[in-house]
Length: 534
Image 1 (cartoon, rainbow, N blue to C red):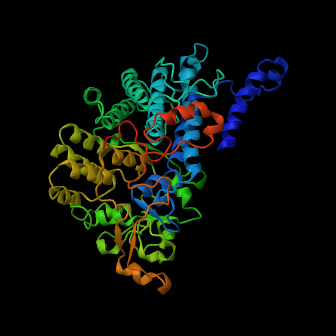
Image 2 (image 1 turned 135 degrees about the vertical axis):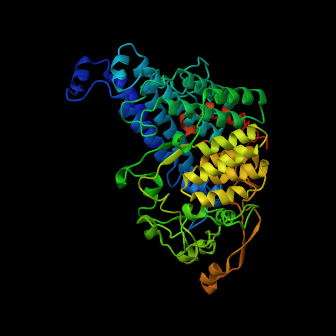
Image 3 (image 1 turned 60 degrees about the vertical axis):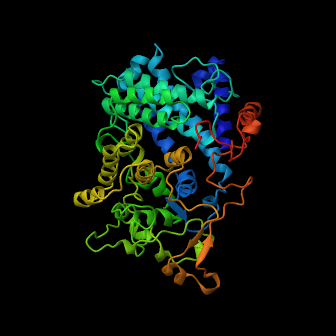
Protein backbone atom coordinates (compact mmCIF):
# COMPACT_ATOMS: atom_id res chain seq x y z
CA UNK A 1 0.00 0.00 0.00
CA UNK A 2 2.91 2.36 0.69
CA UNK A 3 4.19 1.71 -2.80
CA UNK A 4 0.73 2.36 -4.22
CA UNK A 5 0.51 5.71 -2.43
CA UNK A 6 3.92 6.83 -3.70
CA UNK A 7 3.02 5.75 -7.23
CA UNK A 8 -0.10 7.92 -7.04
CA UNK A 9 1.95 10.91 -5.91
CA UNK A 10 4.59 10.34 -8.60
CA UNK A 11 1.89 10.13 -11.26
CA UNK A 12 0.53 13.51 -10.20
CA UNK A 13 4.00 15.08 -10.15
CA UNK A 14 4.99 13.54 -13.47
CA UNK A 15 1.74 14.69 -15.08
CA UNK A 16 2.44 18.26 -13.99
CA UNK A 17 5.96 18.01 -15.43
CA UNK A 18 4.77 16.60 -18.75
CA UNK A 19 2.19 19.36 -19.13
CA UNK A 20 5.06 21.82 -19.48
CA UNK A 21 6.55 20.04 -22.47
CA UNK A 22 4.40 20.27 -25.58
CA UNK A 23 6.28 17.64 -27.51
CA UNK A 24 5.99 15.11 -24.70
CA UNK A 25 2.28 15.84 -24.32
CA UNK A 26 1.72 15.09 -27.98
CA UNK A 27 3.62 11.84 -27.65
CA UNK A 28 1.36 10.80 -24.78
CA UNK A 29 -1.93 11.37 -26.64
CA UNK A 30 -3.60 8.14 -27.71
CA UNK A 31 -5.98 8.93 -30.58
CA UNK A 32 -7.80 5.65 -30.00
CA UNK A 33 -8.96 6.56 -26.49
CA UNK A 34 -11.43 9.24 -25.39
CA UNK A 35 -9.95 12.36 -23.83
CA UNK A 36 -12.58 12.27 -21.07
CA UNK A 37 -13.24 9.01 -19.28
CA UNK A 38 -16.96 8.16 -19.17
CA UNK A 39 -18.24 9.10 -15.73
CA UNK A 40 -20.38 5.96 -15.63
CA UNK A 41 -17.24 3.83 -16.01
CA UNK A 42 -15.46 5.75 -13.26
CA UNK A 43 -18.45 5.28 -10.94
CA UNK A 44 -18.64 1.53 -11.66
CA UNK A 45 -14.97 1.12 -10.86
CA UNK A 46 -15.03 3.32 -7.76
CA UNK A 47 -17.95 1.62 -5.99
CA UNK A 48 -16.50 -1.82 -6.67
CA UNK A 49 -13.00 -0.85 -5.58
CA UNK A 50 -14.34 0.59 -2.35
CA UNK A 51 -16.26 -2.54 -1.39
CA UNK A 52 -13.43 -4.77 -2.63
CA UNK A 53 -10.99 -3.43 -0.06
CA UNK A 54 -13.48 -2.49 2.66
CA UNK A 55 -15.11 -5.93 2.88
CA UNK A 56 -12.26 -8.26 1.96
CA UNK A 57 -10.83 -11.14 3.97
CA UNK A 58 -8.46 -8.88 5.88
CA UNK A 59 -10.29 -5.59 6.38
CA UNK A 60 -13.56 -7.23 7.42
CA UNK A 61 -12.85 -10.96 7.60
CA UNK A 62 -9.99 -10.57 10.07
CA UNK A 63 -11.12 -7.35 11.73
CA UNK A 64 -14.73 -6.41 12.37
CA UNK A 65 -16.41 -9.73 11.54
CA UNK A 66 -14.48 -11.44 14.37
CA UNK A 67 -14.46 -8.40 16.66
CA UNK A 68 -18.24 -8.40 16.51
CA UNK A 69 -18.19 -12.20 16.92
CA UNK A 70 -20.12 -12.93 13.73
CA UNK A 71 -17.18 -15.01 12.48
CA UNK A 72 -14.06 -16.46 14.00
CA UNK A 73 -10.91 -17.79 12.42
CA UNK A 74 -10.32 -21.49 11.96
CA UNK A 75 -6.52 -21.55 11.85
CA UNK A 76 -5.37 -18.99 14.38
CA UNK A 77 -6.96 -16.36 16.58
CA UNK A 78 -4.58 -13.40 16.67
CA UNK A 79 -6.90 -10.81 15.09
CA UNK A 80 -9.86 -12.23 17.01
CA UNK A 81 -7.93 -11.21 20.13
CA UNK A 82 -7.41 -7.69 18.71
CA UNK A 83 -3.89 -8.20 17.34
CA UNK A 84 -4.89 -6.73 14.00
CA UNK A 85 -2.35 -6.27 11.23
CA UNK A 86 -0.75 -2.96 10.38
CA UNK A 87 -1.51 -3.66 6.72
CA UNK A 88 -5.23 -3.63 7.53
CA UNK A 89 -5.15 -0.09 8.93
CA UNK A 90 -2.94 1.02 6.05
CA UNK A 91 -5.28 -0.52 3.46
CA UNK A 92 -8.42 1.02 4.91
CA UNK A 93 -6.78 4.43 5.16
CA UNK A 94 -4.88 4.60 1.87
CA UNK A 95 -7.48 2.98 -0.36
CA UNK A 96 -10.20 5.31 0.88
CA UNK A 97 -8.26 8.26 -0.49
CA UNK A 98 -7.46 6.51 -3.76
CA UNK A 99 -11.17 5.83 -4.25
CA UNK A 100 -12.04 9.36 -3.17
CA UNK A 101 -10.11 10.64 -6.18
CA UNK A 102 -12.41 8.71 -8.53
CA UNK A 103 -15.58 10.21 -7.05
CA UNK A 104 -13.98 13.64 -7.03
CA UNK A 105 -13.18 13.18 -10.74
CA UNK A 106 -16.89 12.60 -11.40
CA UNK A 107 -17.72 15.79 -9.50
CA UNK A 108 -15.12 17.74 -11.46
CA UNK A 109 -16.28 16.41 -14.84
CA UNK A 110 -19.90 17.29 -14.05
CA UNK A 111 -19.15 20.83 -12.89
CA UNK A 112 -16.41 21.93 -15.29
CA UNK A 113 -18.00 23.95 -18.10
CA UNK A 114 -15.71 22.29 -20.64
CA UNK A 115 -16.65 18.73 -19.66
CA UNK A 116 -20.13 18.78 -18.10
CA UNK A 117 -21.90 18.43 -21.44
CA UNK A 118 -19.92 15.28 -22.22
CA UNK A 119 -20.50 13.97 -18.71
CA UNK A 120 -24.25 14.46 -19.22
CA UNK A 121 -24.15 11.77 -21.92
CA UNK A 122 -23.90 9.27 -19.06
CA UNK A 123 -26.64 10.64 -16.82
CA UNK A 124 -28.11 13.79 -15.32
CA UNK A 125 -25.34 16.11 -14.11
CA UNK A 126 -26.94 16.88 -10.75
CA UNK A 127 -27.76 13.24 -10.09
CA UNK A 128 -24.20 12.14 -10.85
CA UNK A 129 -22.95 14.80 -8.46
CA UNK A 130 -25.44 13.73 -5.78
CA UNK A 131 -24.59 10.02 -6.06
CA UNK A 132 -20.86 10.78 -5.81
CA UNK A 133 -21.39 13.00 -2.76
CA UNK A 134 -23.41 10.23 -1.12
CA UNK A 135 -20.65 7.70 -1.73
CA UNK A 136 -17.99 10.08 -0.42
CA UNK A 137 -20.08 10.64 2.70
CA UNK A 138 -20.43 6.90 3.18
CA UNK A 139 -16.69 6.33 2.83
CA UNK A 140 -15.61 9.14 5.13
CA UNK A 141 -18.19 8.15 7.76
CA UNK A 142 -16.61 4.70 7.79
CA UNK A 143 -13.04 6.02 7.74
CA UNK A 144 -13.46 8.54 10.56
CA UNK A 145 -15.19 5.89 12.67
CA UNK A 146 -12.07 3.75 12.45
CA UNK A 147 -9.49 6.43 13.23
CA UNK A 148 -11.05 9.67 14.50
CA UNK A 149 -9.70 12.89 12.96
CA UNK A 150 -8.63 12.31 9.35
CA UNK A 151 -7.90 14.39 6.24
CA UNK A 152 -11.31 15.11 4.75
CA UNK A 153 -12.72 16.22 1.42
CA UNK A 154 -16.03 18.04 1.03
CA UNK A 155 -17.73 19.02 -2.21
CA UNK A 156 -19.89 21.74 -0.72
CA UNK A 157 -17.84 23.30 2.10
CA UNK A 158 -15.11 25.92 2.16
CA UNK A 159 -13.83 24.83 5.58
CA UNK A 160 -10.09 25.44 5.35
CA UNK A 161 -9.31 22.26 7.31
CA UNK A 162 -10.94 20.06 4.63
CA UNK A 163 -7.79 19.50 2.57
CA UNK A 164 -7.90 15.89 1.37
CA UNK A 165 -8.90 16.95 -2.14
CA UNK A 166 -5.94 19.27 -2.65
CA UNK A 167 -3.45 16.73 -3.99
CA UNK A 168 -3.61 18.14 -7.51
CA UNK A 169 -2.82 21.57 -6.06
CA UNK A 170 0.34 20.19 -4.51
CA UNK A 171 -0.84 19.70 -0.93
CA UNK A 172 0.59 16.30 -0.05
CA UNK A 173 0.36 16.87 3.72
CA UNK A 174 -3.29 17.72 4.45
CA UNK A 175 -4.33 18.56 7.99
CA UNK A 176 -6.56 16.13 9.87
CA UNK A 177 -10.02 17.62 10.16
CA UNK A 178 -11.81 17.37 13.51
CA UNK A 179 -14.21 14.44 13.62
CA UNK A 180 -16.99 16.70 14.90
CA UNK A 181 -16.58 18.91 11.81
CA UNK A 182 -16.54 15.86 9.56
CA UNK A 183 -19.82 14.62 11.01
CA UNK A 184 -21.45 18.03 10.65
CA UNK A 185 -20.36 18.20 7.03
CA UNK A 186 -21.40 14.62 6.21
CA UNK A 187 -24.91 15.39 7.43
CA UNK A 188 -24.91 18.55 5.31
CA UNK A 189 -23.58 16.71 2.25
CA UNK A 190 -26.21 14.00 2.54
CA UNK A 191 -28.99 16.53 3.06
CA UNK A 192 -27.93 18.60 0.06
CA UNK A 193 -27.43 15.46 -2.06
CA UNK A 194 -30.93 14.18 -1.33
CA UNK A 195 -32.39 17.59 -2.08
CA UNK A 196 -30.55 18.05 -5.39
CA UNK A 197 -31.60 14.72 -6.89
CA UNK A 198 -33.88 14.97 -9.91
CA UNK A 199 -36.22 12.04 -9.34
CA UNK A 200 -37.45 12.05 -12.94
CA UNK A 201 -33.94 11.77 -14.41
CA UNK A 202 -31.53 8.85 -14.60
CA UNK A 203 -28.47 8.91 -12.35
CA UNK A 204 -26.20 6.95 -14.67
CA UNK A 205 -27.25 5.49 -18.00
CA UNK A 206 -25.15 2.43 -17.16
CA UNK A 207 -22.59 1.32 -14.64
CA UNK A 208 -24.61 1.95 -11.48
CA UNK A 209 -24.27 -1.44 -9.83
CA UNK A 210 -26.08 -0.27 -6.70
CA UNK A 211 -29.44 1.07 -7.94
CA UNK A 212 -29.20 0.73 -11.72
CA UNK A 213 -29.59 4.47 -12.16
CA UNK A 214 -32.78 4.84 -10.09
CA UNK A 215 -32.75 8.40 -8.73
CA UNK A 216 -35.51 7.88 -6.16
CA UNK A 217 -33.63 4.99 -4.59
CA UNK A 218 -30.50 7.13 -4.35
CA UNK A 219 -32.54 9.81 -2.58
CA UNK A 220 -33.92 7.27 -0.12
CA UNK A 221 -30.40 5.95 0.45
CA UNK A 222 -29.10 9.45 1.25
CA UNK A 223 -31.92 10.11 3.72
CA UNK A 224 -31.52 6.68 5.33
CA UNK A 225 -27.79 7.32 5.77
CA UNK A 226 -28.69 10.54 7.55
CA UNK A 227 -30.60 8.45 10.09
CA UNK A 228 -27.51 6.31 10.65
CA UNK A 229 -25.03 9.18 10.88
CA UNK A 230 -27.27 11.37 13.05
CA UNK A 231 -27.99 8.52 15.45
CA UNK A 232 -24.25 7.96 15.90
CA UNK A 233 -23.94 11.43 17.46
CA UNK A 234 -27.18 11.16 19.44
CA UNK A 235 -25.29 11.00 22.74
CA UNK A 236 -23.30 14.19 22.15
CA UNK A 237 -25.61 16.45 20.09
CA UNK A 238 -29.27 15.65 20.65
CA UNK A 239 -30.53 18.70 18.77
CA UNK A 240 -28.51 17.93 15.63
CA UNK A 241 -29.60 14.29 15.84
CA UNK A 242 -33.30 15.06 16.07
CA UNK A 243 -33.30 17.81 13.43
CA UNK A 244 -31.37 15.81 10.84
CA UNK A 245 -33.31 12.63 11.58
CA UNK A 246 -36.77 14.16 11.35
CA UNK A 247 -35.97 16.09 8.18
CA UNK A 248 -34.72 12.90 6.54
CA UNK A 249 -37.90 11.05 7.46
CA UNK A 250 -39.97 13.81 5.89
CA UNK A 251 -37.84 13.75 2.74
CA UNK A 252 -38.24 9.98 2.35
CA UNK A 253 -36.25 6.96 3.55
CA UNK A 254 -36.18 3.28 2.62
CA UNK A 255 -39.61 1.67 2.98
CA UNK A 256 -38.97 -1.93 1.88
CA UNK A 257 -36.18 -4.33 0.98
CA UNK A 258 -36.58 -3.17 -2.62
CA UNK A 259 -34.78 -0.01 -1.50
CA UNK A 260 -31.75 -1.81 -0.05
CA UNK A 261 -28.40 -0.39 -1.17
CA UNK A 262 -25.96 -3.12 -2.18
CA UNK A 263 -23.06 -3.62 -4.57
CA UNK A 264 -23.63 -6.09 -7.38
CA UNK A 265 -20.96 -8.65 -8.26
CA UNK A 266 -20.45 -11.12 -11.08
CA UNK A 267 -20.50 -14.91 -11.13
CA UNK A 268 -16.92 -15.25 -12.36
CA UNK A 269 -13.98 -15.29 -9.97
CA UNK A 270 -12.11 -12.32 -11.43
CA UNK A 271 -15.00 -9.96 -10.66
CA UNK A 272 -16.53 -11.81 -7.72
CA UNK A 273 -17.43 -10.57 -4.25
CA UNK A 274 -14.45 -10.01 -1.92
CA UNK A 275 -15.29 -12.73 0.59
CA UNK A 276 -15.84 -15.29 -2.15
CA UNK A 277 -12.32 -14.45 -3.26
CA UNK A 278 -11.09 -14.98 0.30
CA UNK A 279 -12.44 -18.54 0.18
CA UNK A 280 -11.03 -19.48 -3.23
CA UNK A 281 -7.94 -21.19 -1.87
CA UNK A 282 -8.46 -21.03 1.90
CA UNK A 283 -11.12 -21.73 4.52
CA UNK A 284 -10.01 -19.42 7.30
CA UNK A 285 -13.40 -18.40 8.66
CA UNK A 286 -16.47 -20.02 10.19
CA UNK A 287 -19.49 -18.60 11.98
CA UNK A 288 -18.58 -17.74 15.57
CA UNK A 289 -20.11 -19.65 18.47
CA UNK A 290 -21.62 -16.60 20.25
CA UNK A 291 -23.58 -15.67 17.13
CA UNK A 292 -24.76 -19.23 16.47
CA UNK A 293 -25.79 -19.57 20.12
CA UNK A 294 -27.73 -16.31 19.91
CA UNK A 295 -29.63 -17.59 16.87
CA UNK A 296 -30.23 -20.96 18.53
CA UNK A 297 -31.81 -19.24 21.52
CA UNK A 298 -29.02 -20.40 23.84
CA UNK A 299 -27.63 -16.89 24.40
CA UNK A 300 -29.75 -13.82 25.04
CA UNK A 301 -33.52 -13.91 25.47
CA UNK A 302 -34.86 -14.64 21.97
CA UNK A 303 -36.43 -17.84 20.70
CA UNK A 304 -34.56 -19.97 18.15
CA UNK A 305 -34.18 -17.84 15.04
CA UNK A 306 -34.83 -19.38 11.59
CA UNK A 307 -32.34 -16.96 10.03
CA UNK A 308 -29.69 -19.38 11.27
CA UNK A 309 -30.63 -21.78 8.47
CA UNK A 310 -30.05 -19.01 5.91
CA UNK A 311 -26.90 -17.51 7.41
CA UNK A 312 -24.94 -20.69 8.17
CA UNK A 313 -24.80 -24.36 7.19
CA UNK A 314 -25.00 -27.49 9.39
CA UNK A 315 -21.73 -28.84 10.73
CA UNK A 316 -22.01 -31.78 8.33
CA UNK A 317 -21.66 -29.46 5.32
CA UNK A 318 -18.10 -28.88 4.11
CA UNK A 319 -16.80 -25.60 2.74
CA UNK A 320 -16.59 -27.22 -0.71
CA UNK A 321 -20.31 -27.97 -0.52
CA UNK A 322 -20.96 -24.37 0.48
CA UNK A 323 -18.97 -23.10 -2.51
CA UNK A 324 -20.89 -25.48 -4.75
CA UNK A 325 -24.16 -23.85 -3.68
CA UNK A 326 -25.31 -25.97 -0.73
CA UNK A 327 -29.06 -25.73 -0.14
CA UNK A 328 -30.38 -26.86 3.23
CA UNK A 329 -33.42 -29.10 3.46
CA UNK A 330 -35.55 -27.03 5.80
CA UNK A 331 -37.88 -29.98 6.46
CA UNK A 332 -35.13 -32.06 8.06
CA UNK A 333 -32.87 -29.46 9.64
CA UNK A 334 -32.64 -28.95 13.36
CA UNK A 335 -30.96 -26.25 15.43
CA UNK A 336 -28.86 -29.01 16.96
CA UNK A 337 -27.18 -29.46 13.57
CA UNK A 338 -25.37 -26.15 14.02
CA UNK A 339 -22.34 -25.28 16.15
CA UNK A 340 -20.23 -22.15 15.99
CA UNK A 341 -16.46 -22.20 15.96
CA UNK A 342 -15.20 -21.26 19.47
CA UNK A 343 -14.43 -17.56 19.48
CA UNK A 344 -10.72 -16.65 19.83
CA UNK A 345 -9.86 -20.24 20.81
CA UNK A 346 -6.12 -20.72 20.36
CA UNK A 347 -6.47 -24.43 19.54
CA UNK A 348 -9.07 -23.94 16.84
CA UNK A 349 -6.76 -25.39 14.20
CA UNK A 350 -6.90 -28.73 16.07
CA UNK A 351 -10.70 -28.95 15.84
CA UNK A 352 -12.28 -31.30 13.32
CA UNK A 353 -13.72 -29.32 10.42
CA UNK A 354 -17.07 -31.08 10.80
CA UNK A 355 -17.63 -29.70 14.30
CA UNK A 356 -18.49 -26.12 13.36
CA UNK A 357 -20.69 -24.30 10.84
CA UNK A 358 -19.45 -22.31 7.87
CA UNK A 359 -21.26 -19.30 6.42
CA UNK A 360 -24.01 -20.34 4.05
CA UNK A 361 -24.07 -20.30 0.27
CA UNK A 362 -26.25 -17.19 0.57
CA UNK A 363 -23.06 -15.41 1.64
CA UNK A 364 -20.18 -17.40 0.18
CA UNK A 365 -20.98 -17.07 -3.50
CA UNK A 366 -19.31 -15.06 -6.24
CA UNK A 367 -22.30 -12.77 -6.89
CA UNK A 368 -23.11 -12.03 -3.25
CA UNK A 369 -24.38 -8.46 -3.00
CA UNK A 370 -22.41 -6.57 -0.35
CA UNK A 371 -24.82 -4.34 1.56
CA UNK A 372 -24.21 -0.63 2.15
CA UNK A 373 -27.47 -0.20 4.06
CA UNK A 374 -30.85 -1.89 4.16
CA UNK A 375 -34.43 -1.24 5.15
CA UNK A 376 -34.29 -3.33 8.34
CA UNK A 377 -31.73 -0.94 9.85
CA UNK A 378 -33.96 2.02 9.01
CA UNK A 379 -36.80 0.51 11.04
CA UNK A 380 -34.51 -0.13 14.02
CA UNK A 381 -33.24 3.45 13.84
CA UNK A 382 -36.81 4.78 13.77
CA UNK A 383 -37.69 2.52 16.69
CA UNK A 384 -34.87 4.08 18.71
CA UNK A 385 -35.90 7.61 17.68
CA UNK A 386 -39.42 6.83 18.92
CA UNK A 387 -38.24 5.59 22.31
CA UNK A 388 -37.68 1.99 21.13
CA UNK A 389 -41.12 1.62 19.61
CA UNK A 390 -42.62 -1.85 19.27
CA UNK A 391 -44.03 -1.49 15.75
CA UNK A 392 -40.76 -0.40 14.16
CA UNK A 393 -38.88 -3.08 16.11
CA UNK A 394 -41.19 -5.74 14.66
CA UNK A 395 -40.91 -4.19 11.21
CA UNK A 396 -37.12 -4.36 11.42
CA UNK A 397 -37.07 -8.02 12.42
CA UNK A 398 -39.60 -8.87 9.71
CA UNK A 399 -37.63 -7.02 7.03
CA UNK A 400 -34.40 -8.77 8.02
CA UNK A 401 -36.03 -12.19 7.93
CA UNK A 402 -37.64 -11.50 4.56
CA UNK A 403 -34.32 -10.33 3.18
CA UNK A 404 -32.68 -13.59 4.25
CA UNK A 405 -35.45 -15.69 2.69
CA UNK A 406 -37.10 -17.03 5.86
CA UNK A 407 -40.49 -18.63 5.10
CA UNK A 408 -43.45 -16.36 5.85
CA UNK A 409 -44.98 -18.74 8.43
CA UNK A 410 -41.71 -18.87 10.38
CA UNK A 411 -41.45 -15.07 10.32
CA UNK A 412 -44.95 -14.68 11.74
CA UNK A 413 -44.28 -17.16 14.53
CA UNK A 414 -40.96 -15.60 15.52
CA UNK A 415 -42.21 -12.01 15.46
CA UNK A 416 -45.34 -12.91 17.44
CA UNK A 417 -43.13 -14.28 20.22
CA UNK A 418 -40.55 -11.49 20.35
CA UNK A 419 -39.89 -10.07 23.81
CA UNK A 420 -41.24 -6.54 24.12
CA UNK A 421 -39.27 -3.68 22.64
CA UNK A 422 -36.71 -2.00 24.86
CA UNK A 423 -33.17 -0.78 24.31
CA UNK A 424 -31.54 -4.19 24.71
CA UNK A 425 -34.02 -6.14 22.61
CA UNK A 426 -34.13 -3.62 19.77
CA UNK A 427 -30.36 -3.21 19.59
CA UNK A 428 -29.66 -6.94 19.91
CA UNK A 429 -32.03 -7.59 17.01
CA UNK A 430 -30.38 -4.78 15.08
CA UNK A 431 -27.07 -6.57 15.61
CA UNK A 432 -28.48 -9.75 14.07
CA UNK A 433 -29.81 -7.76 11.11
CA UNK A 434 -26.36 -6.21 10.58
CA UNK A 435 -24.81 -9.64 9.93
CA UNK A 436 -22.29 -9.16 7.09
CA UNK A 437 -22.22 -5.40 7.75
CA UNK A 438 -19.65 -5.72 10.50
CA UNK A 439 -18.09 -2.26 10.18
CA UNK A 440 -21.40 -0.67 11.12
CA UNK A 441 -22.02 -3.22 13.86
CA UNK A 442 -18.62 -2.23 15.31
CA UNK A 443 -19.71 1.41 15.38
CA UNK A 444 -23.02 0.46 16.99
CA UNK A 445 -21.29 -1.55 19.72
CA UNK A 446 -19.01 1.33 20.64
CA UNK A 447 -21.93 3.77 20.61
CA UNK A 448 -24.36 1.67 22.66
CA UNK A 449 -22.61 -1.28 24.32
CA UNK A 450 -24.96 -3.65 22.44
CA UNK A 451 -25.24 -6.44 21.63
CA UNK A 452 -24.83 -7.58 25.21
CA UNK A 453 -24.44 -11.19 24.08
CA UNK A 454 -20.75 -11.17 23.14
CA UNK A 455 -18.13 -13.25 24.93
CA UNK A 456 -16.23 -10.85 27.18
CA UNK A 457 -12.52 -10.62 27.91
CA UNK A 458 -11.50 -13.00 30.72
CA UNK A 459 -14.77 -14.94 30.36
CA UNK A 460 -14.48 -18.72 30.66
CA UNK A 461 -16.01 -20.48 27.66
CA UNK A 462 -17.19 -24.11 27.72
CA UNK A 463 -16.72 -26.17 24.57
CA UNK A 464 -19.56 -28.37 23.28
CA UNK A 465 -18.97 -32.08 23.79
CA UNK A 466 -18.72 -32.71 20.05
CA UNK A 467 -15.80 -30.32 19.80
CA UNK A 468 -14.13 -31.70 22.92
CA UNK A 469 -14.35 -35.21 21.48
CA UNK A 470 -12.90 -33.97 18.20
CA UNK A 471 -9.71 -32.68 19.80
CA UNK A 472 -6.65 -34.92 19.96
CA UNK A 473 -5.88 -36.05 23.54
CA UNK A 474 -2.80 -33.81 23.80
CA UNK A 475 -4.89 -30.75 22.90
CA UNK A 476 -8.13 -31.69 24.59
CA UNK A 477 -9.69 -29.09 26.89
CA UNK A 478 -13.23 -28.59 28.08
CA UNK A 479 -12.99 -24.86 28.69
CA UNK A 480 -10.79 -21.92 27.76
CA UNK A 481 -10.54 -18.27 28.77
CA UNK A 482 -10.98 -15.51 26.21
CA UNK A 483 -7.79 -13.51 26.57
CA UNK A 484 -7.07 -10.37 24.59
CA UNK A 485 -3.76 -9.83 22.96
CA UNK A 486 -1.25 -9.43 24.29
CA UNK A 487 -2.01 -5.92 23.03
CA UNK A 488 -0.23 -2.77 24.13
CA UNK A 489 -1.86 -1.19 26.03
CA UNK A 490 -3.99 -3.93 27.49
CA UNK A 491 -7.75 -3.70 26.90
CA UNK A 492 -10.82 -4.77 28.81
CA UNK A 493 -13.17 -4.39 25.84
CA UNK A 494 -13.14 -4.27 22.07
CA UNK A 495 -10.68 -1.57 20.86
CA UNK A 496 -12.26 1.85 20.56
CA UNK A 497 -10.42 2.70 17.31
CA UNK A 498 -7.55 1.73 15.02
CA UNK A 499 -4.14 3.35 15.32
CA UNK A 500 -3.11 5.65 12.46
CA UNK A 501 -1.06 3.76 9.84
CA UNK A 502 2.66 3.92 10.53
CA UNK A 503 3.38 5.25 7.03
CA UNK A 504 1.87 8.57 8.10
CA UNK A 505 4.82 9.23 10.38
CA UNK A 506 6.94 9.67 7.25
CA UNK A 507 4.34 10.98 4.81
CA UNK A 508 2.45 13.43 7.02
CA UNK A 509 4.08 13.23 10.42
CA UNK A 510 3.37 16.69 11.83
CA UNK A 511 -0.35 16.58 11.07
CA UNK A 512 -0.62 12.99 12.23
CA UNK A 513 1.05 13.96 15.54
CA UNK A 514 -1.36 16.88 15.97
CA UNK A 515 -4.33 14.56 15.42
CA UNK A 516 -2.94 12.03 17.90
CA UNK A 517 -2.49 14.76 20.50
CA UNK A 518 -6.22 15.50 20.32
CA UNK A 519 -7.12 11.93 21.31
CA UNK A 520 -7.80 11.21 24.97
CA UNK A 521 -4.97 8.68 25.24
CA UNK A 522 -3.01 9.52 22.10
CA UNK A 523 -2.79 7.30 19.05
CA UNK A 524 -3.84 4.14 20.90
CA UNK A 525 -6.71 1.68 20.59
CA UNK A 526 -8.02 2.79 24.01
CA UNK A 527 -8.74 6.37 22.87
CA UNK A 528 -12.48 6.88 22.44
CA UNK A 529 -13.93 8.86 19.54
CA UNK A 530 -15.94 11.98 20.34
CA UNK A 531 -19.32 10.28 19.94
CA UNK A 532 -18.37 7.23 22.03
CA UNK A 533 -19.85 8.22 25.38
CA UNK A 534 -21.17 4.76 26.23
